[in-house]
Image (spheres, rainbow, N blue to C red):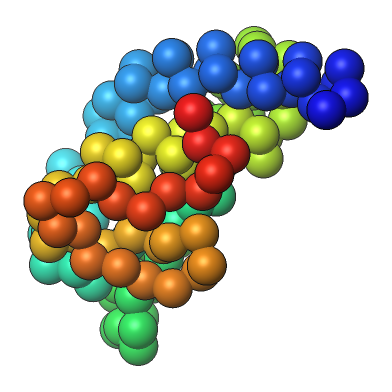
Length: 134
């Protein structure tokens, strides 16, 4: 590993420690109805967590589901931008580290993106995560 890669990994690990606060703030930022729609869609497996720190509609999905996912991602990107700047990392690096945390925190029955890009349903076992996740 190069020195830059090691430094980036160390920064990401520090970022993961702060992801808990970011994850909590993601839920607080959404309007109550939107947060309820998101929570309902996520628990039903209609929206899933992606490794890049964002969410996506799993399968077809309605325009309303896409709107919920888009709104969630807009809010997340705003948080990621602020947090990444504070930690002197890119938005993508911060989002990836947060994606690792969010996938780890999925509940049984929820969908998440596996490292190979396929959608998996969380069981009681730990989810499959990218090898770069801390």
